Image (tube, rainbow, N blue to C red; front, side, top):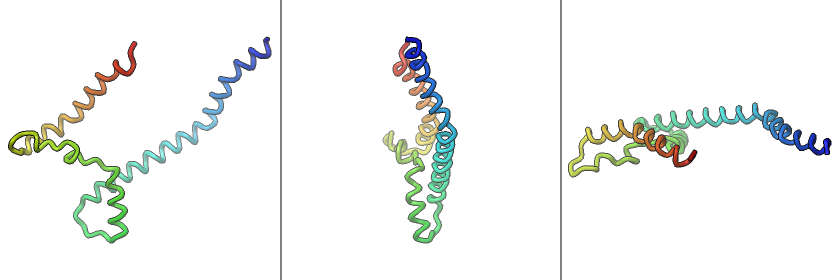
Length: 114
C-alpha cells in the first residue's frame, strides 16, 4: 500500500518535471512567434506606403497585411450618421479601446463565476 501511495505521489511530480524540462523550449518558441508577429505587423504598416515595390516585395507585403489591423474597415464609423464626419470617426476610434476594456471587464464575472 505504501509503495502504491508513493508511486501515486510521484506521478504529478513527473508531469510537472516534464513541463519544467520543456519550459525553456516552450518559452523560446513563444518569444519567436511573438517576434515574427511583430515584424509582420511592421511590414503591414510599410505595405500601406505608396511606393512602387518590386513584385516579390509587393507580394510579401500583401501577405503581411493579413497581420495588420485596419480599424477604418472594421468599424466603418464614418457611416454611422446621415452625414459622414471625421470627428465621429475619430471619436469611435479613440473610444474603441475603452469599449473593449469595459466588455472584457464585464465578461470576467460571466466567465469565472464565484
